[in-house]
Image 1: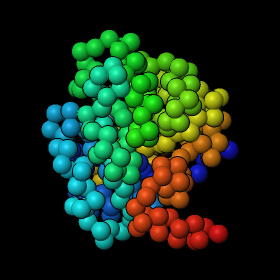
Image 2: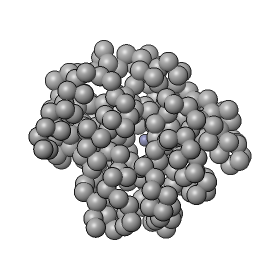
Image 3: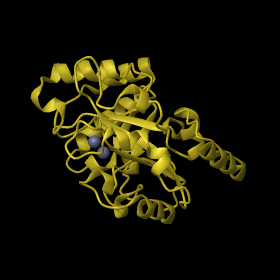
Image 4: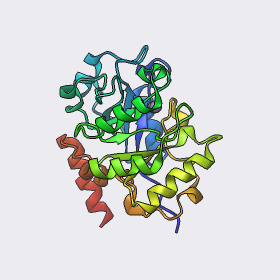
Length: 249
Ligand SMILES: [Zn+2]
Ligand SMILES: [Zn+2]
């Protein structure tokens, strides 16, 4: 059975990231045209070169436009900064956001440390209730043990990501990861990690790689599911999710 195409893209970068293009308004319009119910802006955490300042994340709800054609969720793709699971964005700021992804990038703290230190820090960070998702557990920089991280994800109630911007030349690894996700019934999200308006959404989703994954495992399948799973508290987002719930009946 083919999984339905997800309706929320929880991992995108915009012009605020410096290395991406597309304003909030342009990304929202592109998301609308692709039939999405919502998308999240998740710029890199402040430890990454030329990413936004802490003040950007702390003030997102004040500065973001309100009259967009789809719901825009406020997020971050934070970065690990030590083996104790500390991340660049302070916990009190993470707690204010709708969605917190944690990645580890070769251009961040991980570039100078051992793989064992990356794993130690990452698994510790997954215990942090402010961290919702680990972005791209399959990546071109350091090899993860998918069974090991799956077990930590289940223990800590953390979601793992199938990242569509990193599937080229990585089919074998992603299929291994998705096989483990199917076996352990892991909650996952599928996201574009788009850095421009044309890449938002799920145009390049290889459905056949997800064989064995139940639709109910996909936590970004629609906005109501996202609101429930990630305990989103903003009244306007909850109201939109309620509307969609009614429409779906
Ligand atoms: Zn990333
Ligand atoms: Zn990203």
